[in-house]
Amino acid sequence: MEDTRNKILSARYVAPVFTPRDETRNVNYSIIPKYVDYLIGAGVQGILVGGSAGQGILQPNSERLSVARAFIAAADGRITVIVHAGGVNYEDTLSLCRELSATEGVDGIMLSTPIFYPYYTYSGMLEFLCDAGKACNGKPFLYYHFPSLTRLQYDVVDLVKSLKKRLRNFVGLKYTANDEEIYKRLVKQKIKIFLGFPSMTLVGAQTQGGQVSLITGPTNFVNGVMVRIVDLVLEGNSRKAKTLQKDLDDLMTMVVVEQELMSAMTHVMDFVGLPMGPPVKPLSDLTESQKRIMKGNLNKVGSEGKYIDMLDRYDAHTETASIYTSYLLIGTLAYLFYKLVNTKVNSS
Image (cartoon, rainbow, N blue to C red; front, side, top):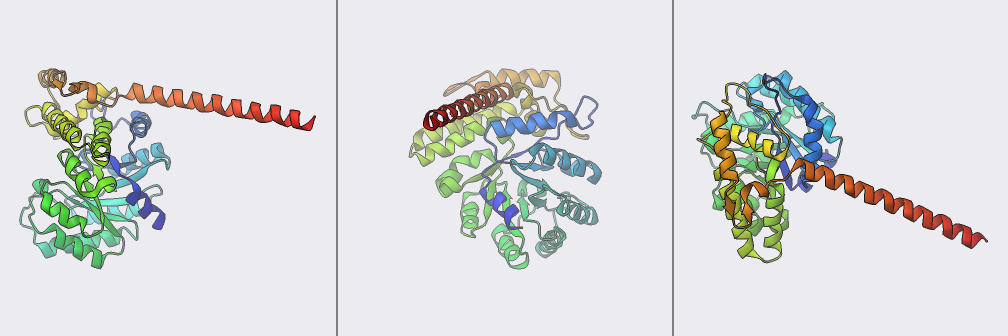
């Protein structure tokens, strides 16, 4: 468990991956290796499979497992892999936790509380999370705190304290909320915290410095921007960091068309060069009109140019990787040639 725990603790920029689908809404497994290569090229250090961006809660367990295994195979140990197992049905959730705990390549399991009923008690949710954490069979366990989705308003700091006492494999949480005071109280608990809202990037860097960690939808397409915000804070350039944070916030406003957040973020990947297709039903896909609105919005100008130019691009990263590989090969051959020549000179 120690190796996987360390992989989670060291991962700072984690992409909650989309589940790619073809036009018939079947999973498009063929694009997953390209997708993972692109993320690694963009500086992403881990992935979360089956979270809210991946729409895992709307998939049957069999599909969730097959998608997770496809991403694990594509990652091939190069980055941290966390899989979300949260669902509505108690037994299905625990069954998925057990399956994932026995799956090689899963570094951690994340769990949200069930949605729909807004009146689960605090004690009921604590028991549910502890049962799920134990079903992970020692695999690192993280809690997914998303109160605007679950509509549960209990004290998350108290919950974290209880989880720390009752689960040896509890390592931290994804904090998808924007209450800065609660976030700062969580930091004092000395656990791993992944921020879930891109709007918290600047606050996170100012609070945790180089330890700030993110699992947020835009990591899929503007990871470079978020890395830069953090770097600017570490360099002491808070003014520029604030400007870039505003650009990031504005970009997300441009992306969301008529409240269609999940479908909209998925279609941003069209501009990246890696189409993710439509969302899983019953989520609605964007209309052609909505796609045109998004494109028009992204072509508006921010502080450093068009918002669309802020996006990481698939072709650019693969080309950079190719050039880097070529330089590495040339350098290696040159070094070997140098050693060979010097060996002959010395021997003569």
